[in-house]
Length: 563
Image (cartoon, rainbow, N blue to C red):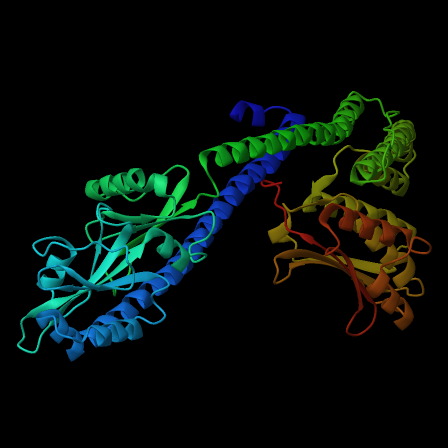
């Protein structure tokens, strides 16, 4: 199972859907059977309790009525005297007997026996002529003189199945006779008819679980013996096809056993299990078919996408997927096609950009040939100036050659002291051009001479000060100051004492920086600093305290040893 779940995506989808469908189906089927069986069993038990209540009420009412008859007869002096002495009150005794048993004679036969067990009076002529007093129903009545006793009969003396008897005492307190009521099976069936259900079986037992009555007479002994055996073994009353419910009627002490056919018999459970298994198998087959179809619908587009991605990895940017649906998988295919199209566009732009870069590098290399030629020409001019005694030409040629050599070198960063030396050569050229018109000073540079800065960033700042700041002055000054901010940033300021920046120009420079139109040198330096160090660095512009402009280059401190 673990290997299957670790397999292909299609297998995982198939097994997941199958398990998520089959397991709830099986659980639901089993739970439904269990719950339905429990509910039906509970319903049958409740029905049995109701039926036994009705049956017990009928027997209890019969017992209590019979007991009242016995009590009334026991108090009748005519009856007790007649039974003791055999007097002439025979007609009054019959009247009393018939009057007391009114309403019960349809179900029971009532007899009066004297102290010897001889029959003296009866509501039916079918009663036995005498009963023993040393055993049986009369003996039980003698043992319990103040109560009505019930006993089942053996059927040898009459067709009665149940007898009730009470001791009758005379005026002297001695036994005068007995009152006996007999109930036949037919009468009991009529009395209990409909109280225990037509499909059920009612078994009536005495206090020792001996059978008295069974609604199915042929099963009386067999059923009673089986129940007695289970009772003696201490096991619950159980049968594969029937359920048993017992009740003891409190007034008479008789036990009532109701046998009900089980709703879920072995055959019923086997049939229900077979039907459930068939439904589950049909559901499993349907789940397999649906899972296979759905897993194929999900896995095939993913497989196509995986193959297309492999082609793109190999460089085939013409790969496209067909959109066969409008769902999420179709949208995924559409997004993939757009992604490959954009990737192809980016690759075309990258190739074009690389081609342009190669061309620019070629042009740059070609452009570097001209400064080399100019440097050689300036060296020649320097020696010609020395030979003809013109030191200014020699000096200017030498300084200009050094500046050109620095501009065409491959180094991007130089120490501050080299930048200041190169700046000094530029100042020498400008002093020859503008003799005596400005002074030049450098301050605060000693602690930062080994700091690395981009090359040729100070020359445009000084050139801007000479050409724009000192345009109309004959005795100006230019100062270069090097310092450090609180954030440990290197600041190189170039200031002049000229006319300064106008409010409009100062506001534009502070917000937008110098443009590439009229201040190309300042613009290039500002762009170089931002490209190298980020947008927080670059040129800062301000006017001096008295007059003139101050241009400050702000960049991080990077020493030569750590660069």
